[in-house]
Image: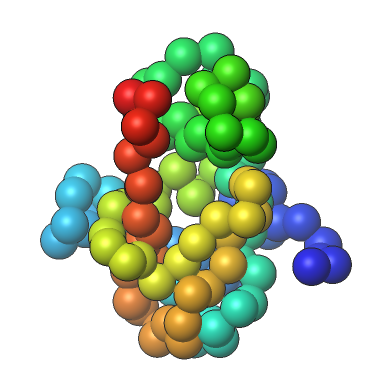
Length: 116
């Protein structure tokens, strides 16, 4: 999909905000209604060499060696886990899986890898 990437917090704050979550710690919430399929933002941060808090792994193939990780530095690092989740990643870009109401917590399925 073609879009202007939202990676900086200043670009994300029209869409999302963080606050205490009933799921876990701090969560990410919709600042306005978000439509199914709508681009929300891009998970941004330096490349990760090992797993840790706020690291998102994207597998570009079917092996552990194909994994690319980013250590989250923007608001998207506060996404919590839920199955099936109301959002999903396409590589590091986050999209709504369904319509999301204002003030609803944004979640995605962490889909723990068989390599973990």
